[in-house]
Image (tube, rainbow, N blue to C red; front, side, top):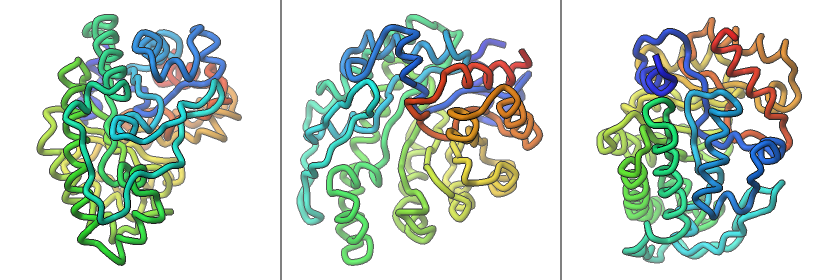
Amino acid sequence: MQPREIFLRALQKKETPRPATGCVTSVVTVDLMEEVGVYFPEAHLDSEKMAALAAAGHEVLGFDAVMPLFGVWHESAALGCPVNWGEVDRMPDCSEHLYKIDDEIRIPPDLLEHPGCAVPLEAIRILRKRFGDRVAVVGKAFGPWTLGYHLFGVEEFLINTILRPDAVERAMEQLEEVTVRFGMAQLEAGADTLCLADHATRDLCSPDAYRDFLLGTHRKFAEKFPCPLVLHICGDTSDRIPYIRETGLSCFHFDSKVPTATARELAGERLALMGGTDNIAVIRNGDEESVRRDVEEKKRCGIEVIGPECAVPLDAPWVNMKMLADAVKGE
């Protein structure tokens, strides 16, 4: 069975000869850039370089899937945020917010033609041609909760979930269009599946807020997108996994702050699980023995896709991810 089929079947909790291995957030590190000869920030802005660096997820690390959207600002850049695209050792960021909560959000009709969207769309086409049916190509679209952080600022957005919940709901309804347009365009470009990244982490979003503002939205995405969807939320999500289980999404990419056995119990039989490997203790600071122990635990708990919990720190050694992929495959 080819890596692509293993990965896609695992997302849907279908039988596979082994767990899948991969990550739907960035696996790029400084030493991986050195290995490939492609560097940030150019790899955020040039489709050929973006595809070449993403391809290393399979060709160097041995994962079953590749994902070319390394940062979190592509859609927001297309919406007008003045993004600083970072440096070799620094991810993109933006400190200027465009709107107050009562403002009407302007979504450009040519959203997908902006480089923030057009570059990764072309990178997906390149990756699809490069790998054919052998390797899964993963797209990534940010949900309206995260886009709200970007456009309004975290404080402005969150305080109004209490003061002006009607305005927050209206903003999220508008921003759903961005998630759907960019996500669908990635599928049309050749992506097999999508990471729905919506950072409703416990530090910023209570379980009640997830239920009230996000559960219905995520259900709509599960119904709308014609592919398995992987929801990514950082941090301790143990208090909202029961809600996530009810969304109809295929898979949840979980953080190591949720113990693996706990995640498995909470997810039940309906929801596939991905990730859970500690990026600091195992991916950045671990060795072959700690990597193998982690993989063995994930296998015992029945994690469908084994890999890093979130975007890998830029100063981590890529060899630890290669050891993880090898251990999953029994090599």
